[in-house]
Every structure is written in C-alpha cells, then in structure tokens.
Length: 177
Image (tube, rainbow, N blue to C red; front, top):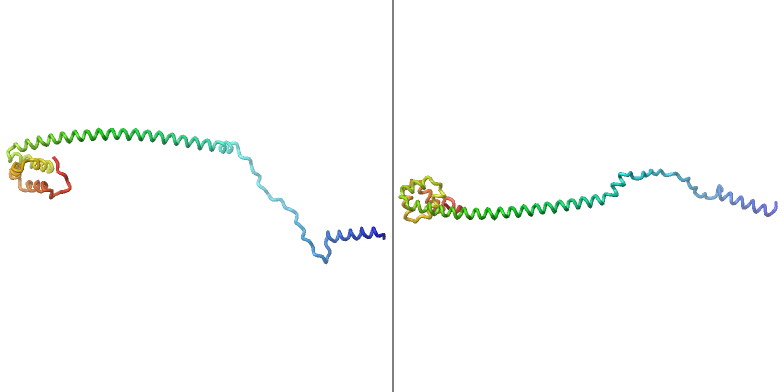
C-alpha cells in the first residue's frame, strides 16, 4: 500500500471512530430529535370585539360627561330648592311674628276683661280654661285681683293653678297665654 493511501485510510478510520465512538472510549451524549410543541392557534379578534375595544375610551369619556352634566343639573335643582325653602322660612318667621303680636294683643285684652269681671264670674271662666291659659292670665293680673279670683275657685283647682304659677309642677315649661 502506498503511504498516501494508508494515511487516508487511517484518517478515515479515526473519523469513523470519533463519529461512532469506540467501545473503549467515552461516548458523547447524543441529542434527541426535537419534538414539536403544540401551539394554540390564536384567532384574530372579531369585528365586534375590535369595535368595543376601539370605542371603550370614547364611551368612558361620554359617560363621564353625562354624569358630570347630571351632577351639575342636580346641583342647580338643589340650589333652587334651598332658595325656595329659605323664602318659605322667612315667610313663616314673619307669620309667627305677626301671630305672636296678635296673641299678645288678645292676651292683654283677655286679661283686661277678666280683671274687670267680678271675682266669682272670673273664677268660673278660669276654672274651665286650660291650665296654661289660666296661669298666664292670673300672672298678668294684679295680685289683689288674682287672689280674689283664686279665692272664689274650687280649692283643688286653685291649688293646682297656684302650684303651676310657682313652677312646682313643671319648672321646665315656660308659661304663656
């Protein structure tokens, strides 16, 4: 054999041994063939999904504007209602003031009338009147006239009115005619 052929044969056998591995040599790990990984096919979004996605921000802005408008209109209605209630409150206060003036005039007239009555007639009138009104009248009368009227009343009613005048039955209550 010629030297060139021997060298080629030797190189070929070395290559073959390296490739297949020799029984005494350490074998290099062989790579496993790759397996295909299943990937789910992603469907493109439908037209309705794309539409919803595209108008979501616009719809959110429109909703916010509507809610803002609604709050502004409610605030205006509330301000109008407050103004109306304030007008009614002022009107009511004026009415109460006129009523108090009228009641004071009437009370003064009633006190004047009862003060001019005979004690027995005044006692009969105050005996049938509610307790607050009777006490109010007796407190506005002069002491001599009030004592004459109380003297003509039933003792139990006179005692009840006297206690009320002193504030023993209900000190918290303001007595007024």
